[in-house]
Length: 593
Image 1: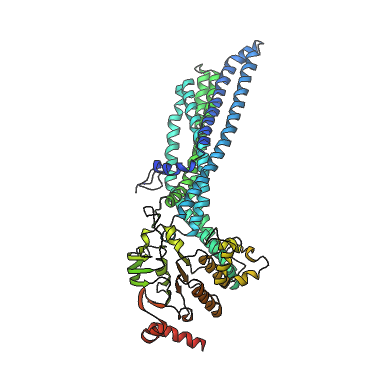
Image 2: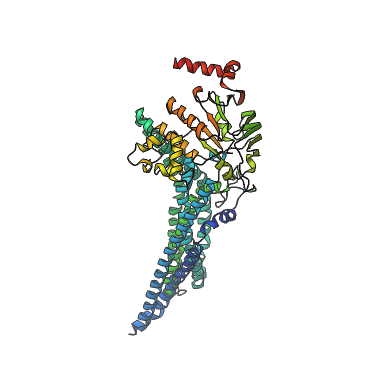
């Protein structure tokens, strides 16, 4: 099987394509990169001049010193010290510039990836796990940053030293420099072979990182459940197993890469022995001066050190290659839902909704919705009920275009949802998701997600409709109460009421409540529905509920069964003619009885 090239992140995409995608991340920091490279070259040039001066010092300065003239020794010695100080000065400058450049680069890279994630639809998010995206934004980005920094500092400096030192050794003694003609190809072939074998192992290691991070994230989110079931021991064992898999994958990959250094040292020592033997013979035969041999040895040391640095750079590039592939995968991902060519002035005129022969499937799977035909008039309250897995949530997620239909069309305000700008559509369609999400910050800050410029009176009014105002005011700090991460200091029912208030604050034309009152008592649920009916008369409201009591007063009720509409009607009509609805109602009234 043909192996990937070391710089390809995909068989079909070459290094130039990767660089082209990542170059914009350097915006604002490109000059630091250029200046860093420039100062590195100057540093290398000054460093390369030192052995030449040393050659003159040995061949002429020492002879002059024997005759009592120490001026050449001080002269050439002073020049060597000056060159060393200049090399140190430009080296320090290049190191600082490279650090600024690499830090700026990874900042741009993370911004690019994060901004791309923000453009993803639900379908895109289904493709990548949350833990994987976090790993790519943190661990993988840091790996690429390290590779970028090393490529600037060592990746430029080492080849410059290698090339210049090799040229100078040839000018000093061409025959002796032939030793490198055998050594360097051996190193190059060995490095390429090790890297090509290590890459799939590194990719496997990063996948294990994803798995471990997913487990950690899930564990921390569900820490209360774990403690409630006294499952700490099992979770520790599970984490240790995942951590061990990361360790084993890392050892399998890096055990190959660490061979680069001992192989390099082996070749270096072989070269040193060969140069010492043949060079010493040449000195004894008078074919080479002591100064030439000393400077030749200095350049050999530079060449061999450059080889070691190149191997380290090579190793880092191999390590970062898998990370680069994963980051580029996110950047290359095309959002399934776009609105680039849609009319920005097209807005939703009313809350009417129409499903026309709608079918939908997740990815390439089977249809979960089939032949849905439904008309909802502006201002209507519609209940949706059905068994688990009947695709109730999927149906309403098509309205704000969180997913796109597979076939058919969904219209809001008489216009296909695919013709609206997403912002215009979602500003008019407010949805309270099944999973209640609150963010770190105060209650007021969380509610303002619905409308950032809302007045305090508007916030209070929305909270009152959602039956949240009273419990908010029971807190010492009222609307300035800090909710903590994810709203850890409020109950499930309070979370639901806050998310309803947040949705209402948008003043939408359509409000979708996806089982959003399941954690509140029946009295509060009734009060929320009453307030919605009284104070939002023109609002089209869709309520997904498990309790018949929550939707029995709706203008129409949609009964879903296995992704199809089983029946549509009012509560009394469905009791008479819909067996599914009658069974649900009977089972719930028996439970109440």
